[in-house]
Image 1 (cartoon, rainbow, N blue to C red):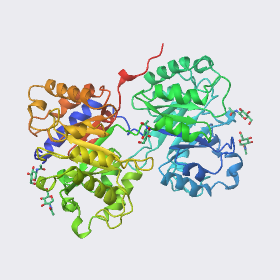
Image 2 (cartoon, rainbow, N blue to C red; image 1 turned 45 degrees about the vertical axis):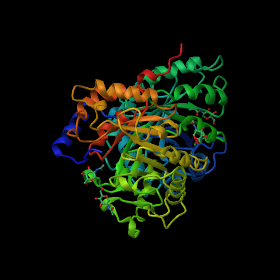
Image 3 (cartoon, rainbow, N blue to C red; image 1 turned 90 degrees about the horizontal axis):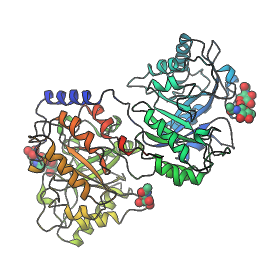
Image 4 (tube, protein in one colour; image 1 turned 180 degrees about the vertical axis):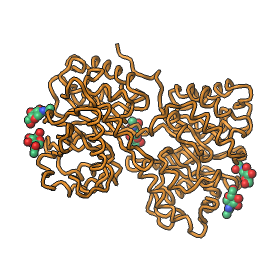
Length: 590
Ligand SMILES: *[C@@H]1O[C@H](CO)[C@@H](O)[C@H](O)[C@H]1NC(C)=O
Ligand SMILES: *[C@@H]1O[C@H](CO)[C@@H](O)[C@H](O)[C@H]1NC(C)=O
Ligand SMILES: *[C@@H]1O[C@H](CO)[C@@H](O)[C@H](O)[C@H]1NC(C)=O
Ligand SMILES: *[C@@H]1O[C@H](CO)[C@@H](O)[C@H](O)[C@H]1NC(C)=O
Ligand SMILES: *[C@@H]1O[C@H](CO)[C@@H](O)[C@H](O)[C@H]1NC(C)=O
């Protein structure tokens, strides 16, 4: 592997700058796919809020509704028979709300409901006043006298259906978004009619400030009539998908109470979701109320066992990488490879080397388990990477040896019940192979097969590899051909004629295409970068962002970007790298 040292901060700044230029306007960090639900109107015996969140199926809960606001009215919450907000009876919900948030569920306050005459804004100034009141009462988190006690809700949802012909929702959204800060997210969503543009909140949507828009596909509206099949409705979805501002996500809104012309559940699952999931801005499904079918819907809406994103190596203290917890908190990494398990195979005892982060030999790395679990709770997959500098201690001696190593790895790092292990009782998400100098006869394919045999519905063993940019990789080629890797990251920073960028990116794109067309079905390809433009013949950052990334993203198996070291200005790279598909994969139905 090429030396992974940063030459200067100047190089870093150059990277930051060119990425910034390439991708502005920046999108806000994109959320993983999810199901959103309204809670509070007690439709269909929805049960308690904590119960709802405990199912694990919902990523967003909209408290329904803030039913009175605007034109000088006092904010009034109506959660029907759950509690009486007027007498302070809803404050006790704060515990349940916090429990939801601790599970990673975003809890939003939804403005809307039945009493539409009490839900108007009278002027731009009125909109700003309402935004201020909402922030201080529900979002800031310091108002224990508020209707929900001292909670700090994650954001605001607009479910506005019958406003006046002149409206100020765009002003409201702008004023709410102005409260966004690195400390406080202020997530914003809205429900729209299935006619594009929405006559009421169209202007608000056009601000581009809504994190997601859920289109009501259950209305009695010719644009979403499903009686003759889903064609009409997929057309409508496409219109929305191509018109939504960049970086905003689109949700398919469905009601379990099946109004007449809505598509049936099996049409949603079998015909609609498979089509709309390939839209680049697909975000998930919104259900109008809690529903017993949610596990089925959640699976069809979100289960791809796969997230496009950024993977990074952590542990070798390159580039002032900081702590693991900090790394995951940035929200920009989807996969972290703990680097490295540096000794294994041929009867050797497994040995972890995380350089100066901790001394594994004396048990000093067990305390990392808290940070690892925090990463996992954020949805980051944490893998153990086999490899590193001491290549002479990283060989497998036989097929049987490979199986023994797989068993040891599983029992020590993946199974999760071994508190005496080097990382305590963690249950890592999988194994990464970063093997560069093995012998000419090798057994990596046996190792991969044995690891994959531990996959079960209860435990997915994620497998990735880093490979040289020559296809096929002389070391891991056989292992890659098993098709058992979830992703393969090609090191485009090697000193190798196949990825020499000195004469432009042509050679690199040729190599990428070769890999892309040869990789087994269902496996994803990552572009491996050393965040250091002076490394060998690697492309300069600007070439990567303007000439390479836009092209490789359209490969059907594009999976993301692998960073060999922490990259300081990751926020600029993330939106482009984590987009799974580009405009070309928009479904077209005629
Ligand atoms: C091994 O470590 C040395 C010294 O830290 C470094 O110069 C070299 O690039 C490293 N090699 C690999 C393969 O990481
Ligand atoms: C709350 O909303 C429900 C359903 O829309 C309505 O029936 C009820 O009268 C409202 N309660 C108050 C106090 O306004
Ligand atoms: C308003 O409430 C009534 C009675 O509960 C219901 O039939 C109607 O569908 C509701 N309308 C809206 C817009 O929620
Ligand atoms: C996800 O993985 C599970 C277990 O490996 C598998 O049964 C399921 O079919 C996968 N789902 C998709 C959409 O690939
Ligand atoms: C851990 O790895 C580093 C970097 O490759 C190396 O310098 C160091 O000697 C290793 N530590 C042990 C205990 O092997």
